[in-house]
Image (cartoon, rainbow, N blue to C red; front, side, top):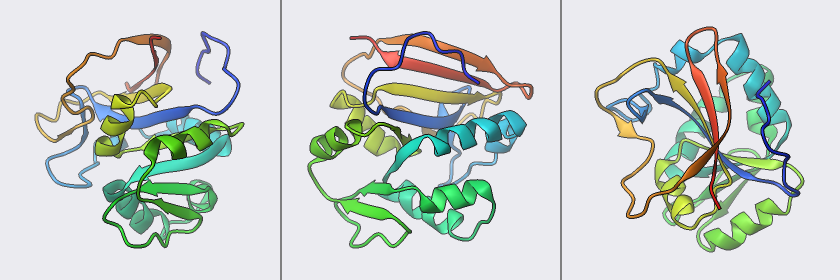
Length: 192
């Protein structure tokens, strides 16, 4: 269980959750090159994943991550797969024509309005992957927490988790958790 530093605000938060390498990549040099996730996967991260999914209002994706996650999780079985397939999902995309993954709603515009609706829920919503969507949400100041599991590996190349931005975003550390396998989970919130 992660150490809480501050009390939780009323209403749901929008939380970016990702596994990233020490050099800042959330995937390797090819799309869905995620083998480094196996370095940090284990009992502790599985338990955290179950806790997050059981307390989740919805999962939020950009098109690319949505398509990859839907292709993967609809073929998987087990507790995490059951949760991934049953939790409400929102995919933000101007190019996607339909969203067939169970409990998915396609949103083509009004990102701010849709995120505002999520924040009225009692539970948190999680953004998985989705670097481009996350960059948009960051620019709009809509992400309430950054929860990153740093894998102890330097890939030397790949897709960066954070795109270059024109402004700095100062963060406040909420907690850290060191995993037995060397991964570190960092939780930050934007400074107000």
